[in-house]
Image (cartoon, rainbow, N blue to C red; front, top):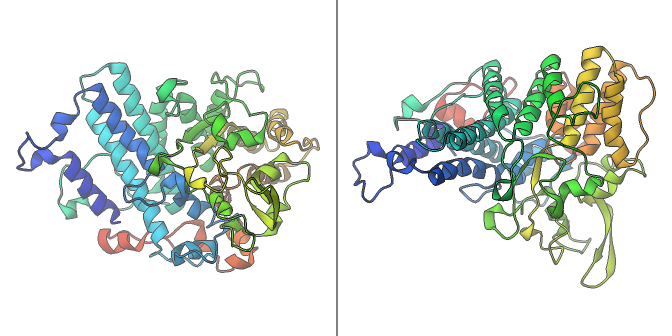
Length: 492
């Protein structure tokens, strides 16, 4: 749990064993390992694995842990009062402190993933293997590193920027201060720019790896977060399918599924709408998506049993028009127990979006094989609408076309009124809220709007009256302050 000290020491031990007086015949050292294409693939697979698994058996970043901060810590979710971890409950009530174990864990997991990516980047570059494969794998590692740093800088602000595998186990030399966020963002931009040269797509066992389109889309999201609208437009136009809107050049073939539900089911994962997803599979232990937030809803068909994590307030359900197909995909109020044929009425809405309907019995969500979507094409379209609105002082024809493509799929009427810039901006953010519930976007959206948007959104819910302006950033984990000497964010 000691992020830089513990993780770096472990990484140094695992990958710098040539500095120890061990018998090379009985120990695989770095100089012996990084020789073959299989070695290179294993190193990059280790970086990918930090997204969907945890070495200590905890919730992985993209299984549940990130959503504990971005959903439970936002205005979408209040965790079950019966949850055994008080730090989880504190996130849901905006009463968390710097010593919160989930905040500490998400920090540690991200730096563990960054360490794995750094190991791959450092060791693959000089390998005498096929140049195309080597360069592709390095770019994939840089994409992963960029994604992890993007999460960190949005959650915490200035964070330590570590770009190489440590070559020492000296504790004092491993201490790294916080790097200004502008420098962190520049590294993210550099890494994603390098990832532009990734393949457009993959086949067979390689499906799900980072692509060129994913790099452009993630960089567009970085620029939107930075309010760098001209650069955001350039990247978005490269991703949007050519011919869909004026001046778009994207050649990746992305599109929306006809059915909103297909974006979240096993049979359609890694489909036309999925720009980048974290991969999970059924019955593979840590690689099961067992920790999806919705899965708690199916712990019992007995409505008297608290069915897990619930919306922060019934008004979230009421945001959707009756005709909006997203409402029935995102929530359920009744279920049919296939074992008995009985229809169970749960009363208040429960989360439905990440229920794996391919498993039997339905209550066995521990076998879930759903992926976690990180970027969907719907995200790209709504970012495009937002960017055009900001660049032009109001919505353009293409801005309306982009948001209406998302609304049409949902079965709701198009926006047609000539809205002023502020009203159209609010419409885009409301559309994003309905489209991406439980997908980890809402907290980031509220935070990047600046001012008191996040604070005001949290304060609307009785369970989150402890919210304050300082909640726009999470506190630096207390252990990092105590052991690494990092400074704390304002207000904490």
